[in-house]
Every structure is written in structure tokens, then in C-alpha cells.
Image (cartoon, rainbow, N blue to C red; front, side, top):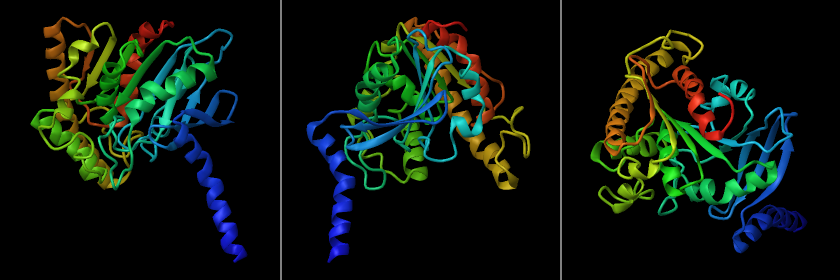
Amino acid sequence: MAAGLFAAVAALSVLTPAQARADDEVAAITGQWDKDDRTVQLRVYSAAMHQNIMVNVLRPVDRAAARPTLYLLNGGGGGQDSATWQANTDVLDFLGSKDVNVVQPVGGRWSYYTDWRAADPKLGLYKWKTFLTEELPPLIDAELNTNGVNAIAGLSTSGTSVLQLPIAKPGLYRAVAAYSGCAQISDPLGQQFVKLSVEDWGGGDTANMYGPPGDPMWADNDPYVHADQLRGLKLFLSTGTGVPGMYDVYNGPYMQSGPRGYLNQLVIGGVIEAAVNHCTENMRTRLDGLGIPATYDFQPTGTHSWGYWEQALKDSWPVLADGLGVPA
């Protein structure tokens, strides 16, 4: 009996803070840890998703003045697996020398960082668009004493998201960098790419995301369809062709280990990159037709893999820096 009472009290102690936040619908920072003199981990409660989200922050060396913020998104795994910028590249070292705050949310695997129409039995309740555009930025600005100037960058599935989010919240970001992302999601080919990511790899159901094929939600969230709303942003879009290139070396530093990893990167990574190359070429045609300037990095080779994304981020820095108002 005592054990049962203890378990009930313990469960209540875990659930009560989150439930209280859910009831009053207030997003808030509910915890903070200094991992070192530059790195802070925040626990942020999302009222939209009724859960705490971990957010990793890299602070600039010089914090004497208010600094801008780069939101850096991971790919399909949402930073909940080993497929992260930190684990696979040196971009945090690169960005650590810049006068910016670097904010990386951890969570949202296979979510496309968007607001889903319904909770998914496998993936849960996703309201990432609300979290990233409405809940998190004012908390970051207040906690870090930023100057309110933002940019956003992402790869693969989040290469789509970083084009969606500025459309959802005009004025929130001044620069966008999309690496190997597919902007088209509402046409049959684009929908199949999303279904491959969400359903085949993530185990979710895209019907809970945007509804069945042809549902208006697909077009409503399609950056290609609404590309005119990207006007005024500093834009950088990059892609390879899927043809093996300089980072597709057996047991190389950016290669999955072993024969299987090698074949996966060359075959699966090659096919995916060829598809996003097609999407990005179409997006360039669309933006050119609208008279919207952008910086494009179309490489003659390259698979869907980390070596190319590390280089693309570094190559995109002048565009991001221009939007953030810091030296390139």
C-alpha cells in the first residue's frame, strides 16, 4: 500500500508541472543548464504540444552587445538520433567564431517541423510550426538578450521546413539557407518524397500531417506554391546531383562505416539527392519567374550526406551573415 502511494505521488510530481502549463496555455523556459562557458541547454515547455522540448544554444564569445540568432535545424531524426550537425560536422566550431547565437531544438523526428492536423499514433502531437514561430523566439530573445534579428538553416527534410517557416511568419527571419531540401510537396512527386520520409522511415502517417493526397493543406504548406512570399529574404539553396563525389569515399570521414554504409550513401543517398536536385532546379525556375533573387549552389556531384552539408553551410555563411547583419 505504501509502495502504491509512493508511486502515485511520484507520477503526480512528474505530470503536474507539464499539466499545469498545458492548462494555462503558456510556453515557458522550465529549466536551464550551462554545459560549458559557451553552451546552454534549455528546457522549453510548448503549450501547443503539451510537452517539454530541449533546446541547445551556442552563445557568441562576445556578449557585450545584443546579438542575432541563427536557428539551425537537424534533418529527419530531429536531433534525437546520431544524425546531427554536432555529431557529423564541425559547423558548431565554425559558427562558434561568429557573433551569433546558434539555437538547435531537439525533437520533432519526421515532423517536417510543421503543424500536423491530428496527433499521430506513432509520432505524437506535432505543432512545430507554432513552437518555432510563436513560442520559442520570444523566449530566446528574452533569455539571451538578443537583438531580435533571426536567420534559419536546415538540411534534407528541414530544407523544406526552413522555406515553410518564413512564409508562415513573415518578418521573423531575414535569411534562409536550405541544403538538399525539396520545396515542392503538394504535387504527386513531392508528396511521394514526404511519404517516403514520414511513413517509410519515420513510421508516421501523412494523413495526420496534411491529410490525404489532394487535401488543400498540402498546397497551403508548399513553399513552391507560395514562393512569392519569400520576397525580401536573403536566400541560399544548395544541392548535389546524386553522382558520387569527393565526400563519397569508402570509410572516409563523412561516410557511414562498412560496406553497407558505403552502399547506402552511394545508392540511397544518390537517389535522394537526384530527387532534391530536381526540386531545387524547379524552385530556381519559380523564383526567377517571380523576380526573386537567391544564391544557388548546384554542385555537379554529391550524395545526400554530411560532407556536402557541412561545406554548404560554410558556403552559405555570407548570405546568412548578410541577413543577420554580422561580418561574413
